[in-house]
Length: 99
Image (cartoon, rainbow, N blue to C red; front, side, top):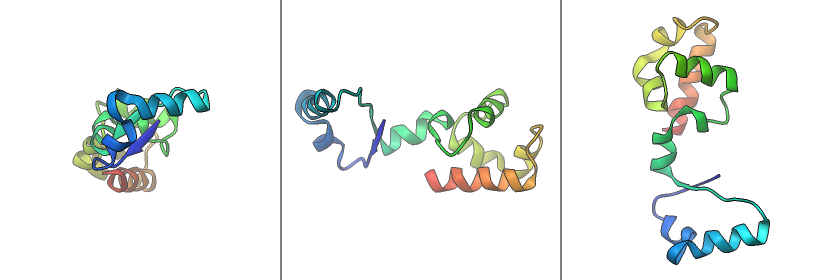
């Protein structure tokens, strides 16, 4: 997966996806291109800094995007079992850095 700035997205994709197709053929990998806006709206499953278990905990508590994390804040995050103040602060810090 590649996250590309919104301004550069047309050049990266190319006409009819030709650039992505060629890059995929050359590397042998499936390449998924996301704009910055798409990445932010897709949610926490794409946040590599969050371990799988944490992602599951957040999703189980209806927190599915970085915007949700920022909105709920530290106090709400601390209500999730296993998330103390320090961990909640780190989660919030990562969410803000992505947003």
